[in-house]
Length: 460
Image 1 (cartoon, rainbow, N blue to C red):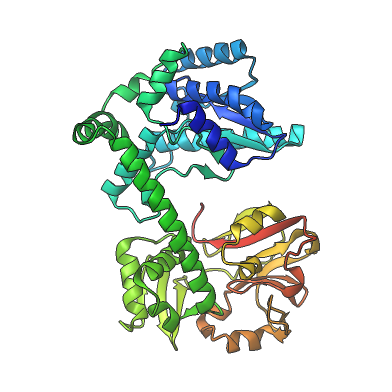
Image 2 (image 1 turned 180 degrees about the vertical axis):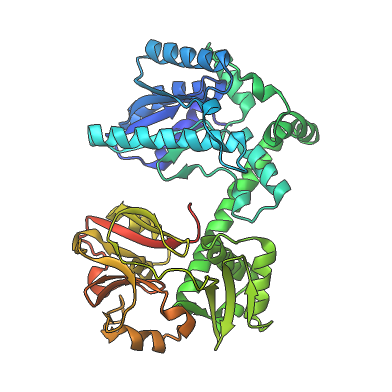
């Protein structure tokens, strides 16, 4: 079996991070994060990365929280590692309704990491990544927690090794191995006393369920982690097939029922889960209801108070339930960021480097139609609904048509046409909801930055 050092080094090699970047280690002071910092301090410089650390004092455990911060400060000073700290003062904050203390703390923690990362990128001009100390044991606990609550194959994938700027170099190591590493290398650490109390679901899994599973199989953590890795790979494959299916079936603001209904069950479920997740109403029952609708079981099904799935003329589409008193969407000047529309949806315009969008487009060049060359968008352009007389040249079609004719030919239901959002410069449509960008704005090899224009049913 490879040592913990070898596995961490292999992880960084496979991540293939370009030299010259900064790796910020999230350090709480516990054995996992101390091991992470020690390993990255030794390994990352060999990969051309400089190492820094970040610590958020949540302020939930009084003197113990302050003790952890003092320990991390002393550790980083001893190792000569730059440290970024902040106090969240969670006890003084209002927690969103329905959100647990643990999830609220995690949201604040990742917000802190994101802010520090962006600040360091602006200050240094270097790429910044954040390494967290999630281990195989955490992955096993996450998998069991999700399975107990009801999970899709994607959810069964547990904690991803890499997601955006976030890396988990210890994901292949168990907590037992980490404690042994700390003992062998005389690494001091602090213990969060709340982790030893069965006060939340994850702690009960860690303290009660996992010991029982280890009696059945001493390698239970590794077995669960291996299953999660397989599930991630299988889910990614299904997701790719689902994207390809949705691309083939796309028809205006909807999708043709025939290719959807004839797709293999796992692929169709993945495609429907993707569509319903985007609208904030995905669960097994609703995915099943949409599948029955596609197969001819009725003409519509209510998914939430705002969203109804419909089947008409061989087209599957979503219709929003709106009050007659709602105002018509007023024009919004082009921007980068997120903004809530009058119908409650979120308009998201995300700025990305060209290399990033190439990686995101798993469905080939067709998926590029969801992105626009940022440098070619006139800043006087506005987001609005149609008013008549607009023209549009869809990417890859090689033809310019009036928007009215295009929507008619595409089979977009009349009830949907007047609320489709578009980005326009005068009467020229640059981007159309459900269709993507115009041909002229399609990112090419000379593109430096692109924007992803997306509509969300709720804040992500």
